[in-house]
Length: 521
Image 1 (cartoon, rainbow, N blue to C red):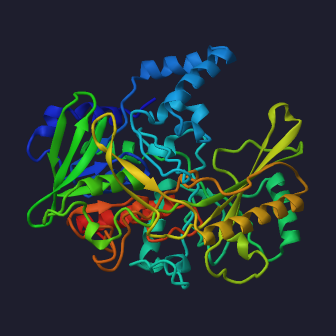
Image 2: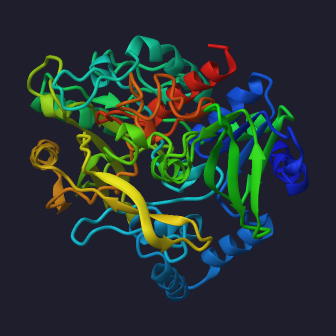
Image 3: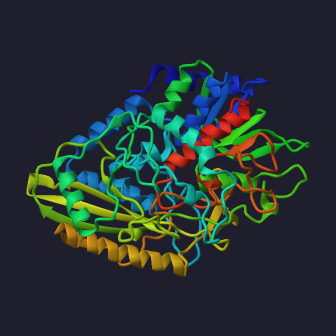
């Protein structure tokens, strides 16, 4: 059931209210993880905030009816329904979570994009309050980047325009808000987090850990760090200073003649009209590629196309984690019920035999295990996530003719793994086989090659932050060089991505950017 204050914030966001001059002090585009936190941080600073989210609201009655229908329908009818949806969602249906909730993913025919032949990119999009974090079965893993992740020594990506010490207080702030569960491990290259619940390994987790450490005594085997779904947007709504307009597909950012953000324009799906709202602060939190599309569609004060385009960085350096999976079975064992997100994590497993700080780019391995139906065996899932190098040729651009259902230009996405990425994938694949052998499991599936970019759901890099405007789109506080007051705080901002789940870093950058925007940090 939706929070009453949030429901009121949605009801209050009428077009008549939004159209009034001075209706908002800040506009946030996107109501996912970073959009929710930005809303909370800005209302805490006393601002009146309008959140624009592209997701179309679904009535609670209709949602409950669909849920009941799914549970009561025979399997053949459910399969027929999924087959019909798959025809309209050929890309979205490739996502692991799609069968559980196809309605939360976009319609690929209404919202198309193009890729070159032989270079697939699977762009999974969930337009709803909470974004992809609200998709069923999302792991909700939160890990910090370490100092060397932000200042890579190999010269293959730029040094970040801020240090780990500058970001550390914001990691701590976000982790306290998330009320995270995990363990304090003391791994230098995976800094510990602020935890609200310290977990002890279950007997099965202890057995897995012991077998791995027997094989690799110098490796790190840590408890996954996770949080239950956050309530940032609901907490922000409780202030009474939040409005949330659903079904708002933002097209572009407006920039004033003196180079400051002036507001945004959007297509309102419910009314079918094109709307605009003015505000001195705008936060793009729409996801890396959606935020980049908005920047590409926006004009700077001097009339050049695309905010940040003169830097040569806008739309370039697209990254997504290199993912390799192995599935296996184990004889049945006692497994305690665990919330989504509980797992074991092997950070920088590429350096498992050295015992020292890992060098260069690497990969980590996530270990999950759940009882199979009937309890006859245990299903073990291993997933390696490696760091993809940022390369200018991996890019997105506006398609010259392709449009979405609202007439907004679609993206052309050109992204593939480089030779170094593939070499890392081969090393990760070999490591997964070694882990399976150490655990004594029976392998039922092993990826031959890394999944197509996009499958890890960790897109980053197409509007990166940097030290100067000639090589980056954003300044060290995530503010657009070409439009002061415009902040981009999703994955687009990252100069590099390390191999950890990036969500915690997105959120820490968001908290820091909000403090900078309001003068409170």
